Length: 98
Image 1: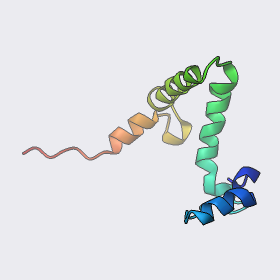
Image 2: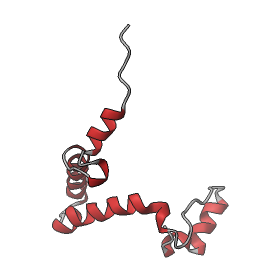
Image 3: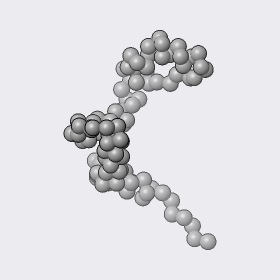
């Protein structure tokens, strides 16, 4: 993310002072982060913007519920209409019988 909070002198200086390596995508290189950006767009439009959470714990519970839905029940066109769980678990190798 190239947001000002992550590129500010104060933030990058703090990282450097503590020997923390700075890692971020290239400026204007949207392809570096396209899948995560798409995920967060879905989270915002399908969950966050639809609810007015009263507390942090309510927000955490709502996001937990959404991610369980997103991974186990929401089909994805990029996965041939499978859920991420279906796609992942079908790709796992079967254990060999002893």
